Image (cartoon, helix red, strand yellow):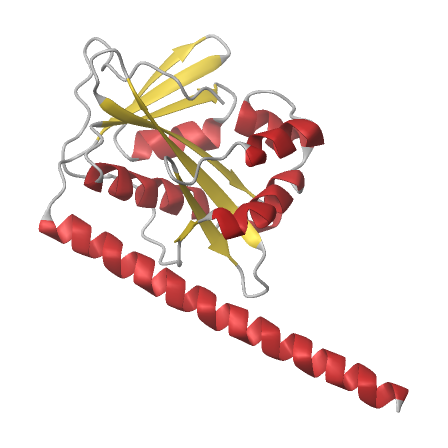
Amino acid sequence: MRIAVNFLRPPGFEGTDSHLAGVSTIQVPIRSLGENHRARIEQHLLSLSPQDRHLRFGYTAQDVHIQRYVAGLNFERDEIFGIYNRKLVLLAVAHLAYSENAHNEAGAEFGVSVLASARGRGYGARLFERAALHAGNDGVGVMFIHALSENSAMLQIARNAGALVQRDGQESEAFLKLPKPTLDSRATEMVEEQVAQTDYRIKWQAKQLWEFLANLQKIRQRV
């Protein structure tokens, strides 16, 4: 995945100012991930098939490459978003990597991965929407995607959001102009994060309860 990129708009780029046209409206809790989620992020990425690793990173990343990538995640600079199931397995992870070009214009690169068992639920589109909302609220002018041209699902998500997609052989780039932050956009992100954190706490408590009951059952069986 290329992070240090030039975020100047390409010639003829107009983008969209206020909408993410066609982005999925599916309601699913998406929470911001911190340092304490690093191990689960690694587990998620290691669970990807060779083909999925190829699409996510632009090459067939081996375990050691993924471990190095996860170890280098900067949770202070970048934003990592995730979707958990009720067993606290990360079904999908998005990385919003911040950078600046030579003119000190803020930009961010988006990358996403979804487990094969969770495909077809619109998770990639929802993570794209969530990342765009956060980046816009952070004052980022353009969100950037660098992907293999064969990654049609990712490129279609970008097109549906109104991004300009440019193909150059085996690689493609997409640029999405982000709207300026508003009181409504900031409030929307705050509510979404609170809902996601509450959902995570409920799932964590439920998981702890089921593990306690399972251990209790094992003790009874021994007795």
